[in-house]
Length: 115
Image (cartoon, rainbow, N blue to C red; front, side):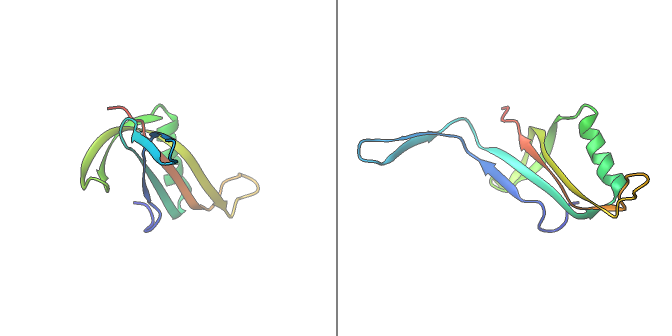
């Protein structure tokens, strides 16, 4: 499980908007809300980090995710895709290039918007 405080839940809403003659915003939401989950670890072993990333690289760029929606207060199942992946290698062996561990490793998964 991600490190406490390193798994923010974000929701985006696309809006079709403009301003009327009085300068008031006139708009409406387009489609449905789209969720994003960031998953981060303060430290993680290379083996576990590589295992997770291999899963995505080996044909699971998009996947169905069953998750708790913090906006709706219920479980949802939606198609997601892998977005940004970040890690900071620590104590890298000069001969092998392999780190002892990773710090601030994270990835984001984003709702595809498919209904």
